[in-house]
Image 1 (cartoon, helix red, strand yellow):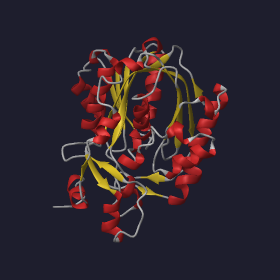
Image 2 (cartoon, one colour):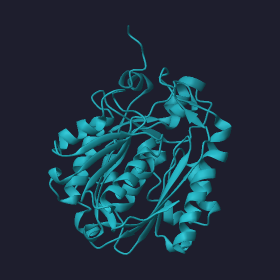
Image 3 (cartoon, rainbow, N blue to C red):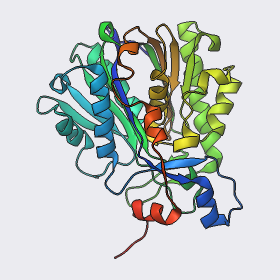
Image 4 (tube, one colour):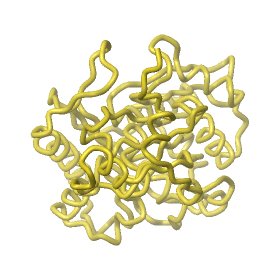
Length: 350
């Protein structure tokens, strides 16, 4: 399915956020395997005691507003995609909308589709703006990410994400030329309401999960756009680890120079709903006018969203209007496993 709105839509503002604390993969290995297992990432970002999906979303949203240079009251939707909303019944969207000054004349809601909840919110915002129902809509992909102690997911489950304000193409930093979605009922990762940590069927996570959705979504996009891998200056695929996106990109004919900027998983872990979106933010921090970007998200359950993006001259004027993705990654503070357990409240005290 390829999507194109009635009027042109683009990204008019963007912003990222990554918490400062970092847990090395070697520290997890030390605790659970006496250092005998190799970590798939160097380290991962960990939220502080006073951070959650709502607070991190607010920071990213404020950065997006700084680059959009619009009043928050002009936003007509605030949508937050996440696997780790702080409340089971109370929307994160209303918290963010209130904090950034977008209330009360605004829609607010939470989105859920595992790791592509954020791009689902972007797709909805494209339709909202593209139909003429609104001029500006804010979509966020953000996660604190959970992993059962000692589980393989604990090595990669990081925290962070990005926020995007969608608006008219004539005001855009990046024009959204087209989007494409590819979904199926493929189970590879799930969590029931009564359980705290997610479960995963490892043999389904790669094929038919990740590769069976990301690659077809990207291929269909290029087929419809008449493009080839060589036509893109930057490519960002969802990053559950380094191995999956690297294999998919190589198999599809992309070169390392095209994806190196947006591949952040080794430094901050898999930010789940924010994974592809924060990779895109890192690319936008350095992208130049006229460059073309392909972004493909992935969510367990399963599905992928592909975006064909074109950078406009407006981007260069606002890249430094807020902290860059690399600014957040650079302000790292190392912690050990005991501090991690305390911060993530993994130790029951009652």
